[in-house]
Image (cartoon, rainbow over all chains, first blue to last red; front, side, top):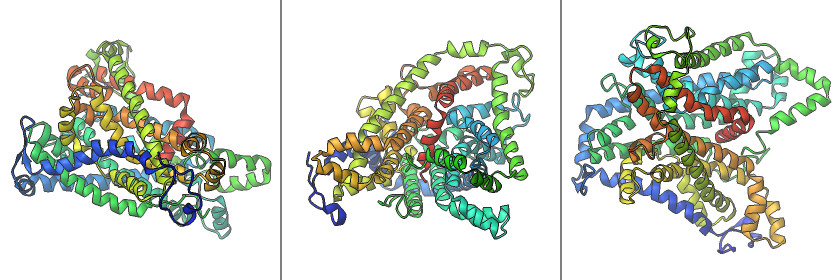
Length: 296
Length: 301
């Protein structure tokens, strides 16, 4: 493997020996390309074909995309997906931010409660969905009412269950973030006579802005994976009222075996997710090549 | 990203407190004041967390005949372990061992592939290494749901359908983008001077990787181990679509099948949920600090 670099400006150019060749990245790139990038390209290709899983895909031009645009479920599904993302973000961010800042204090009782708060995250989302499927059962459950039978009840249940699972994780992120805020800022603010709430809004929140971005990226990307929660809790119902895009895709592909149409939905999902992530990655500065400790 | 910033607060923040009692009194004034409103909020959340867990445990100990009549919030009158026996004799161990195999293999693949990639992305500084890094940066945006149809085709063509590999390979691929981000973040924090010192000694890049980079990147690596293991542990979609028979069935899919298998026997269903949580709960009890620290690393700074 080559140990010299042909290009590399500035500081990097000083020492040419001892740098690994780009070849080392090849296994990872090939593996990821084969199992993620190629399938994504294939999804675009399949979206222009008709295929039932047997035989060969037949090209049908734009028929699937036309069908997608004419499908009333798509507009509804897009709306639900966006609404679910926004509601999950609001619920998880508010609770996790407050709990995280609270848990950053070093009191004994806070440490004990934080340890308990984390327990839901230890269950898989499948397990949690089944747990609430049982607890929301109108005959068996805590609430002796058909919560999942009404569309607003089903929607709120999905938001709540997602929050119940992921708030522990985001609390942890905020706890870590809040502990890195220099104490001296609070001391200075208190000398200036700022009260607790003033300090929260003027110091804690602004200091946590990077943490908020990171947590937001994870929540937004994560709310696309609520698939199993929807499948187990509501099966997209009542009717199609909680059928988010991934669920719609699953039904088209693996219930009605219309893989061409499923691929069109999947392609739309990729486009939406890529656009969204590009915006969020730019905001979060994930792409930067500099050390996170620079300037400290 | 994580290896220095995480464990530190507990050690460095406490040490000055012990050395300077005056400073401690002062910091107590700022951070240790009681906050009744926050206290109330935390109690409310405690109830929200504990009530479902309590209801689950209590119901899983209830006999099937009493399950539909009683309120799940009442403690069971005569607790029984029958539900747990039902689950354990329904192939639970097989499901668990499959999941463990998947998790261990996924972690192995992710580490073997991502550590060299992150090393190159940070150290090589060529056009190709930058391109490789950006590929994974964009890969964060590919939702697994979006590629299951073509992956299904690919898996079938490779003759892997209905095998553990059909779950392992895509799960590893989709755990890679975040792993690469976490690892490059950690590796960037390793000082250039250390590499230069080793280069002056004539060390090869491979030796630097094993003697310098990996030992100093332990925090990031443990974050990746925990993240990848959790992805494998939680994975549901790939097993649902790429496997079918009992042989390669993993725990999450097994739980999903219990829903129809146990039907109205909700106590047995909840017993299966409890059992599925015990392995990770045990890890949490033994290695809480490592788990928490590793997960904080996923969030970065």
